[in-house]
Amino acid sequence: MAGEKGPDKQLGLKTSKELAEIVKETAPVRDSVTERLFTQMSGGQNSREFVKKACELSQMSIPKSGEPLAPYVYQLQKSLKFPNEDRYDGCDGKLGPITFDALIKKFPVLSPTPRREIKETAKEKRGEFIQSQGLPEPAKRQGAAAKPATPEAPVQSATPEKPANPEVAVSPDKTITVGDSLTYQFARSFYRGTDKYAQYNDRYFKSGRSIVTMRKNLEKNCDYADAYTVGAAANDIFYKSVDFLESEFMKIIEIIMRKNPKAKIVLLTLHGDNYKGWKNSPKVVEKITELNNRLKRIAYHNANIKLIDIRQEIIDAESGGKKILAPDKLHYSTSGSKAVAGLVKDYLATGRHGKLTDYT
Image 1 (cartoon, rainbow, N blue to C red):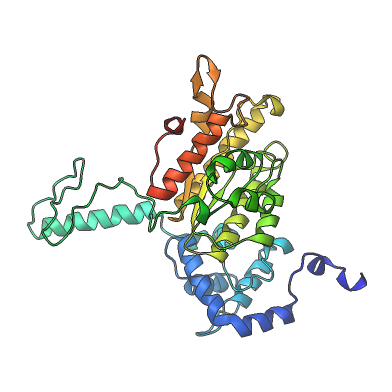
Image 2 (image 1 turned 90 degrees about the vertical axis):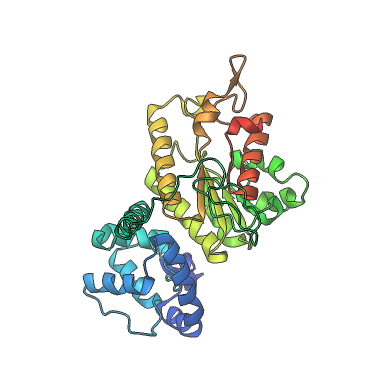
């Protein structure tokens, strides 16, 4: 159709006029979501202040008090020469991981203080305060909780040293699994006892699916859920660049966060070292390592995202000299499927998990 030509129309993006109307009608809701999402992704920065500083560095007019952020972020995206498909339908008022990372790369001075550094600084200040007041050093924790329970409070069980913020336990029937052939394999065990496997198969995961198809299906079908498990890009690692795969993962994460900013997101590392289908390519092994490192970085900067590292255990787990979890070094065996499903279930239920081989 003649009226549908042009990159904007083909990708279903909004025109400037349409964007202005959408922003005007929904600015309060959009800016509220912007603030929550951006605060999570940026390690605590205020989105309005960040955009204001980025605009100043770009020599653009800055947002005034009470104005929606969407037009300013959209202009920043254009100044960064974002591809049309990465502008998120005219940005629609929300900052996301790609927008944030791209702005940080252009303006490193706006990079947030790493959470680990903040934590160490706070620890030092606590120590200085204790010394200045002549107070005794707090006793180190050993095993269970160090503080005895008071009569008014129930006894608390010990928690892991670095909990994954489990506000409530999430069951499989409240979890959406997105993925490719590897996800397809363990999903049957994960959803056993519910009707979700048949319901979700074509919509979210299917054997042979590429990461682009995963993302497009999620854009089209994404339902609200308390948690989302995202399988790695096994069908793309041989052909696609790590930069491309990382950008697709970020898009998937943003789609999820738009639907439920407080959702738990579980990422699984990609394995397949020496898988015969990849012709034992050293380049693929390097790409797998780099992709997993980038997924770790994404998870580190967001408390709601957990990367479960199953790669080395899949490679090493043997019984009688045979691979028991991934016989061809990529696809799960029945035991492997059950193990991955059990590990993810345990994490969603408790906020912690053991080794993959504990679930075989």
